[in-house]
Image (cartoon, rainbow, N blue to C red; front, side, top):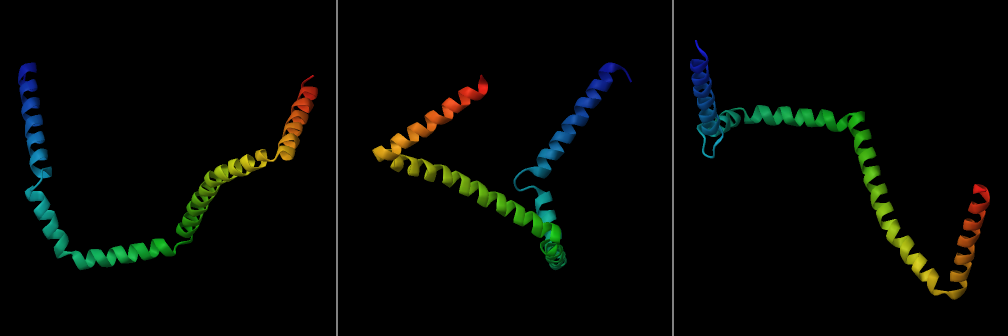
Length: 120
C-alpha cells in the first residue's frame, strides 16, 4: 500500500470513528437508551452494591479522619478569614481613643527602634 492509499485509509477510518462517536454520544443516542435499559434491569443489584460500598466507606477510620481533617481546615480557614475583619474593627475602635492611639504609635516606634539596633 503506497502513502496516498494509507492516507486515504486513515482518513476513512478516522471519519468512521468520528461519525460513530458522534452518533453514540449525541443527544437521543440509541446508546443512551440501551445503557438506561440495562441499568434499570440491574437497578436493585446496583442500589445494594452502592449501599454496601457507601456503608463500608463511611464507617472506615480513614474516611472519618479525612472528613475531620477537611472539616477542621474549613473551620480554621473561615475563622481566620473572619478574624481579619474582627482585628481591623478592633484596631479601628482603638485608634479612635487618643490615649490608646498614642500608646500604639509609641509601641510601633519602640519596635522600629529596637529593629534598627539589631541590624547595626
